[in-house]
Length: 115
Length: 109
Image 1 (cartoon, chains in turn orange, blue):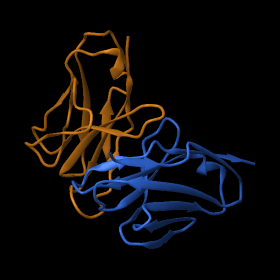
Image 2 (spheres, each protein chain N blue to C red; image 1 turned 180 degrees about the horizontal axis):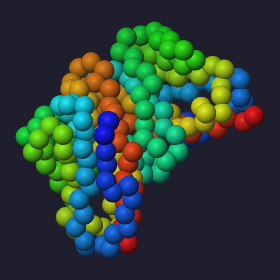
Image 3 (cartoon, chains in turn green, purple; image 1 turned 60 degrees about the vertical axis):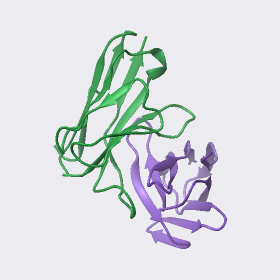
């Protein structure tokens, strides 16, 4: 693999079910992010991790949790999905976080529909 | 609150020039980014401005005026493949990216 791999690509889920979106990167980037993208809105940050072992809350963290056990993996879990979590989810990474460009590399996205 | 404004949609003709504007109001400024996103795909990095002025990269240029809270992306010699959404994002004082909703650019032959 090269870059960021997300799985699944697409999923339809019943409300109340638990779901984990997977994200793996092979660039040895320190920082990783989860965004959701909804029509008419900008990308909104859900959670982030500046380095393995640490995580932080973004703009819209409620209903989501993350973990960063190692550098490469950053899964996003919906403990009990609700229809408002229907969205396209993007995982991204950058070399670091803070000043400077720290360009984001994005995964291909996971389209989630909660019924 | 923090806000990034860009036009929702623009239409241009193949071979022409188009300017996509972005205005921002954020708590602090640590750089402005432009990303391109084709329909159904991931955003990809186009440009980064942290100082005032014009940055040129091939057919694409990006301009920044920090005093005016304003940037634009200039696309020259438009090609059909330039049909995409263009996302403006500003890094605030906490080094978090604030994203605009994106400008959908439609190129007509």
